[in-house]
Image (cartoon, rainbow, N blue to C red):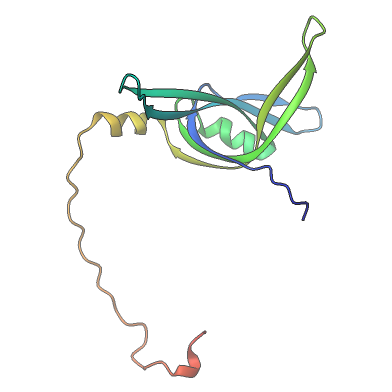
Length: 149
């Protein structure tokens, strides 16, 4: 073990659609901004303050294609990956840096429509579900020797 760790876990909302870039060799990269919020109460004003942090997410190959197909602006997603800083030159020849999250895993949480529906609707009363009858698998008692532990 190297004794170091580079791991990022985020839950946030897409700030834009997934932008795809395809390579000649058949690979592809998808990029999108992800917003996370930190909310606290200011001690000076006693008001609620929300700070938004923007993260540049990079997804590769099949994962990128899945994100492009199913994610859209406003959707809530869990992203897991690692930090990667790129160095590049702009049009003027100045060195620029960009820190990105290289996504290794993701989970779709809610769409923008689902989030808006949850926020706009009052809590609904759910109907009680019919109890499921449990039936014994075997009528013979288990021997102690048959237990898997």
